[in-house]
Image 1 (cartoon, rainbow, N blue to C red):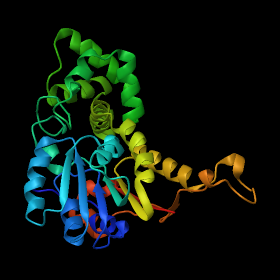
Image 2 (cartoon, rainbow, N blue to C red):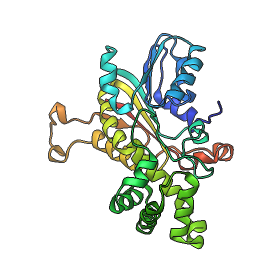
Image 3 (cartoon, rainbow, N blue to C red):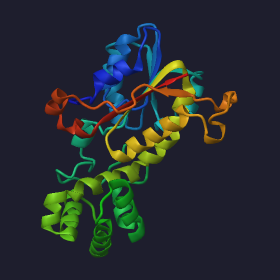
Length: 306
């Protein structure tokens, strides 16, 4: 199973792992990060979360080759605090979020990629009822327009949404190729080949299907609360919407709330919970960009619990 883990070295170093650390990999995927973490915690423990059963089955076998001091939890990372409590764990030493879609998922027949003709699905968790076909064939014009504008930042979202609604009245939109053709027809060839709106539309629908931004907004505060003093939270994002959320949450938890700024003594509950390790995001090196073009948009941010 071929998968390239973006900013892997920087992520692992950012966690500041010790031999006895208890670490959470919030986005197990195909064990790119988890494998390296497990090698470094001979006396520690790894908890890994994922919604994708295929990834879990593969990664379980891979991690078992390295050690037995791990547990994989089949759940969305926004359930992290609750699921760890079930395991008797209230605090950990490090948490990693790698928010990229893994290469095997893109390569599987799930409709994540606009490069091949596949059935529209886009579910990370196959147990969920909502898939890309449901979004495209049942959402209102306004909802489709708003999703593509908000999650894809596509300026012609209204034109594309109107075309989708018109085409689905003729027949159900079922495949990635059908969707790509609709997008091109809606915006015209000149705009399509210059601006590649299909990338933005596919991203937007994937985010909606998997509720990715809402999950991230729910999960980050939990992760901060779970960290032991000195524990690190490392997040790798792949588009501006994710990075904005991470940046805002990190800023909120690293500062004194406005009403208490400038006071000689700040009540303990309002003191900063984290300190920001890297003021500017860490970006892929030139070597990594050459090796893997998918890493181009990646940004790494780190905070430490105080």
